[in-house]
Amino acid sequence: MRFTDMAIKNLKPTDKKCYLREANGFTIRVMPSGVKTWLFVYTFDGKRKEMNLGQYPHVSLADARTKFNQAYDLHKNGKDPADIDRQKKEARRKAPTVAELVDEYIKKHAKVSKKSWEADERLLNKEIVPLWGKRKAQDITKRDATLLLESIIERGAPGMSNQVLKITRKMFNFAVERDILQHSPFTAVKALAPNNSRDRTLSESEIKTLWESMNSAAMSDEIRRALKLVLVTAQRPGEVAGMHTCEIDGKWWTIPAERSKNGKEHRVFLSDLAQLIITDSIENAKTTRENAEIRNAKEMKRAVLLTPEGQEYTGYIFPCSRRFEGESKGRVKAPEAPIDSHALPVAVRRNLVWPLTDKKGKPLYDKEGKPATENRLGVEKFTPHDLRRSAATFMAGMGFMDEVIDAVLNHVKQGIIRTYNRHGYDKEKQQALEAWERKLTSIITGEKAKVIPITRANNNE
Image (cartoon, rainbow, N blue to C red; front, side, top):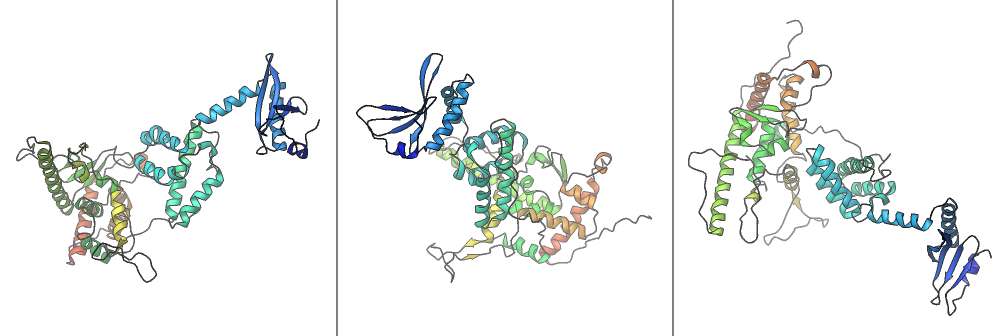
């Protein structure tokens, strides 16, 4: 007989299960309960076998016939279709979920080859795992990728949409390179938001306002001083946040290669203002460490182990205060560590849009019913990296050559100069940072300082 939709629909159950066969083993089984199941009944190695093709009506006649034809072709070629089907199901069962792929990417790629691996991990765990974590990585489609990026833009974060595309595409490419996946759903997916160039610099009035407002802003002393040091030294926020006393020798701070973005050791001249900030930070870190030791000793009922009198503090200049927490009540004292570089932009963002509350701590709302906020920093939106750019811009305005400013910023030399110019620019970096300190001091205090402009050398000289 030739199966038809109407014939299959009208099949009635009997007291016993019955089989109806079309041809070449294409069969439907009807149980006394009325359950109808598509089968491919065949013989392999002298044994009768039944391959389940799905239940009717969830699997239509057309779909069942397609599955049968595929299985029948395998059987004609001397293969056991049921065994191959089981292998596919087992492979799918063992196929990684997106959450598992994230974990493997972080452990085997990001941690190995990226200094910013923690930022990758934070982004993936926030944006990807909650949405796709339980799904099989091989099931993610290009449409899924596009909808993800669109949803991030719709919530008002176009920049984050582009960052998610960059990191997630890298993760799926890693999976293809490792033969975890056959293809990446991010292939040919383009950024949906414009990549705006970062050109925000703060004016003199903004710098003065910010310097003063940070003293009363809702941020820790470590973050406050770190932000100021970014502006004073023109160094990367992450490199400043991780500063350690072992990196400082007199008026020079050497950022080791393993901590610098470009993997090159970098010497930074420390002006008087930079040294003042560092000295205050060290005193604060030393006091915090000692107070934590006294508290821990009291909780654990042991002797207090303080740094001997006269011995210099050794450790992170901007330590994470949580690392000093007590050992009692089930808490384990964690190794000392610097503040997370991510804490700097978070602190800035929160203070730019600080929620207002009444005396009882309840949120206040504006006339439109939105949460009322205030800008506690007194300047337009900016990021910690903009402080570094602002310092570089002022140095350029004072006449320092691009080569000197690039040396201050630890930018990689470009072109032929990268191969032949091995000059360290220490003298020039010192001149630029000292000139910037004088200018910055005049901005902060409102008093005129002697800022000597550096003119570009004339080619005829």
